[in-house]
Length: 179
Picture 1 (cartoon, helix red, strand yellow):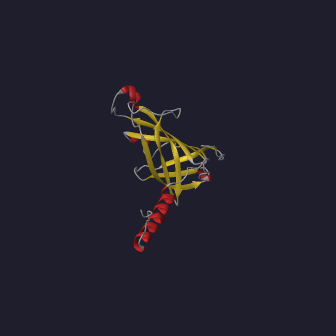
Picture 2 (cartoon, rainbow, N blue to C red):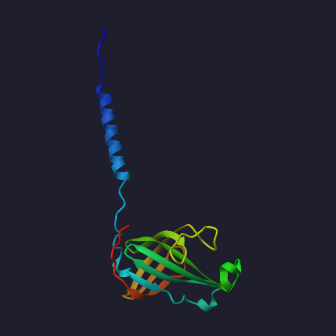
Picture 3 (cartoon, rainbow, N blue to C red):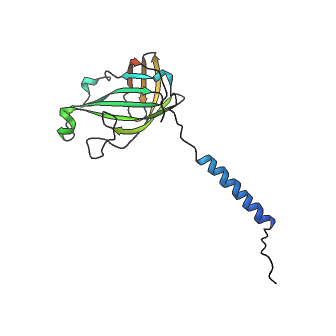
């Protein structure tokens, strides 16, 4: 007669399997989360459109950039207007020393540091082909933020020595949209 199949775990083996199960469950729950289905509100003080009109010693600089920033809830859209007295590349791109780049993405703030993370895009916000003029792909920048007045903010980039002094053009309120 044949014996019925039996399975026996020793106490150390059973303890190991239980511990392994708990570890897999713990790492699985911490490493995965659902994305939110709505925008988050972002920072109230930056909501709206901001513009940089000039940079210090602008007329003496060989090249400089001016920023237009729009913040809506936790999202941003930036236009960087660049000016150069030196032609670094194709004039079809540099347009006689004046060109613009656009970036869209999301931002977060921790203490006095604003973190912008997004990608270069076209003026209408559509995907930018990497074969076009200037930068494409990912964009990531950190700014130390100082709110000078209700309508003046200084964004000091961690990668640039010239701060962006932007004044408020239009104040908006966040109305979160579905993602």
